[in-house]
Length: 426
Image (cartoon, rainbow, N blue to C red; front, side, top):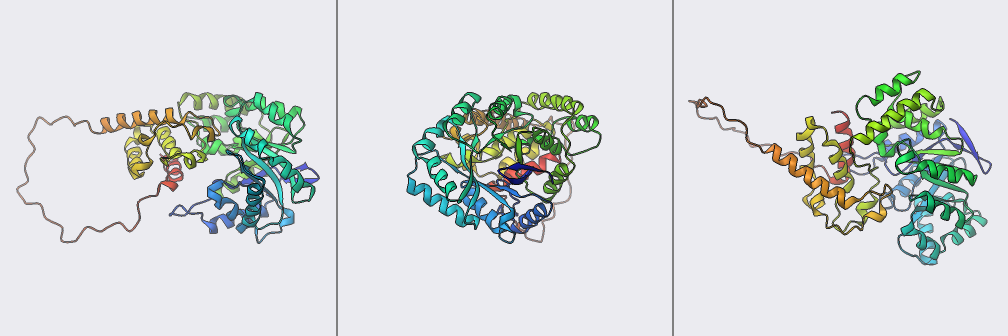
């Protein structure tokens, strides 16, 4: 494992994100699998773990506390966050922090972040005096570093950096968002402040692990050896010297193993690989896909509880005409109340989207796509010129009652992961 220095500590260049843990067939966290993944990661040098108060409705912090309990806490670094889309009292903030400590099974937090700093949330952070509370806890040794995760414009980033004395910043840094979300400008602004950077979404929620067309072949051709698409994205983010840690929300052991191997033999992206990456960016942008990372923050704020990440993933997959019937089959498994046509355009979801997607507009596009697919699927077939011969024998009735499926219909909360797995193999 490669380590980078921060406040005298050796931080693993690869960090383990806890937003996308493995799930069982019921959509719940698969703790057996998760424990094996974390044990393997720690045994191979990973020591930085990232979670948040709101991840998975609080289950992420509890899961992290549970799987780390058997390990030496003094050798691990835990980062968690607090979101603030409304102003909170000091007592409310203190209560949340105490709840986080209980969930994480620890008496201190290494790195505490303002979660998802945007123009919409910034005043609430300031009015709630979160920084003052964290600074006091830092002086007492209950928190070791204060940072923020950022999702807004470079211009606003300057205001945030100027407001407080930050220990580190967390930004979405990947080769697609270098231009799409102006990550280049954000990186340069933070670099000028000499503040370490923690990278989130280096593979953009898995989008850079499943590339369109012949992008994977181009990357391997440019490289001296074949590797996964995700490994190029991880290496790209880790190639910047100001990057302290690259977070990856790993969902299975194969991802853990691949990421560890990538960092173990880490080499910065070379010129030939960068040229291939530039071609991949053009290919990705030409697909017209909705660039959703699947974080699910929008769903928690939707009055209709629309399964927005699944809707977007389905829309992206529907660009492949060959899998139209598979697309419609998956769409049929989603609860009617959680489909795109339930959107009322209230826009309550939009301030919570880290990717700054116009969600209502995209859901309307999905409605149109559904209509087109359904209508094309229902077109009558051309009639044969020859009359169909009638069978002379009566159709035999089955003597056995039709067996009912023992498996429950797929639940919408796990559809997003199933869609990614199914369509990536199409």
